[in-house]
Image (tube, rainbow, N blue to C red):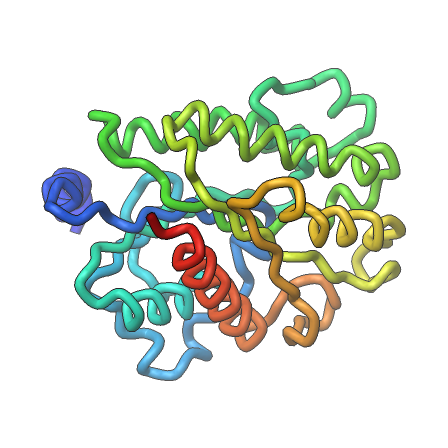
Length: 266
C-alpha cells in the first residue's frame, strides 16, 4: 500500500495533463473543514469513491471516506455527477483552531504570541505549509487551482481585533493564493461560520461581525460567493458539524461552486 501511494502522484500528474483542464480545488480553513464527521455513519453510496475524484490531504493522496471526514465526501460525489468526464482533485489543507493570522503569507509570530493563539502557535505558518505542499504535489507548475473552498473564522470570532480585520485578512489570503499559485482567476466559495456566541466549549462573542464580513465579501470580489451554513446539524459542542451536517456542507459547497463556475465561464 505504501508503494501504491508513492506512485499515485505521478499517475495523477499524467492524468491531469490531458486535453481538458482538471477541476482542482483547495479545501482549507479550520476544524469544520478538517471535519469530525464519522465515515462509519455514512451510507454505502457515500463510502464508494467516484472514479474521477482524487482526494489529497496536505499533498498526499488518501481514501475519500475513512475515519473522520469533512465536507469532501458529498462534495466529491456531487461534482462527479455534474462533471462525469472531468478529473477532479480535492486538495485539502486545513488545521483545527487556526485563526486568519496563521493563513497570512507573512507570519506575524509576535502578534500570535501576544494574543496567545495556542493553535496558531502549535501549527506554525499554515499558509507557507499549504504552498509547499502544493508545489511538492505538482512540481512542474502546470496544475492550477480552480477554486478555494474556505471554512474558517470561528477562532477570529473570539478576538475583537481579528474579527475587525477579517475582511483584510481574507482579501490578502485569496490574493496571495492567486499570485503564488499563478491562478489569477481562481474562484472562492466562503462558508459562513455559525457557532452560538456562547457554546459548551468556548465563547464566540464576535461571530456576527465575522459572518457579516463573509456575507458581504462577494460584493468586493466578483470571483467569490458566500454560502450559508444555517440549519446544518452539529455535535454536542454546538460548534462542529456532525456527520449529517458535513454532508450538507459538502453539498452546499458543490452547488455554489457549480453555479459560480457557470457564471464565470468564458
